[in-house]
Amino acid sequence: MNISINGSNSYYVYGLKLCIELLLKHTGDINFVVSDDADVIFFEFSHEYLFDCERWIQKKNGVVLVCYSVGVLRTAQYFPECFRDVLFFDKETALLHVLKECLKRVENKIERIDSHCAFCKKMNLSKQQGKLLTCFSRGLTTLETARLMNISPRTVFSHKYILMRKFGVNSDSQLLKLINCLTFL
Image: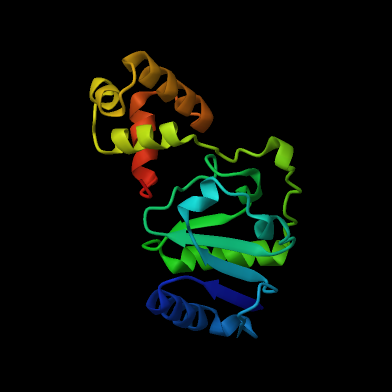
């Protein structure tokens, strides 16, 4: 089995590699490769994945993609269609459970769903919507946000409603929970 681990934290990548070697040494031949032609690809979560189309993920048929991060969203509901089959895990999750799921997927050779970009949930935000999310993440009220952005409170409500529809959230508390996950703000 060929495994590729990509990430910005070289200490975590090295530790993950050692843990995988230790936990899977009895299963047979394990090779760590740098290329994207692996059976299992571990990659670090980036918030840009919510907004950018990642063609390299779509092309990985028969490959198990594993996304890791601290506090990563545990569901792909906010992500584009190409992330539907990606296995997400928090860095603090027991690695044994993640590896069991990886092995199960490798054995079953699950073909990735042919996602079509026409039905993609890729999010496009205007600058004003980005500023609005920033204000909400800082705990500002609607009136404070309107005053800061020099717009009417009704416009803030309207943009907030549009954002809630875009992300599929139904309440202010769900929106705040989502904003807390989007630490790029």
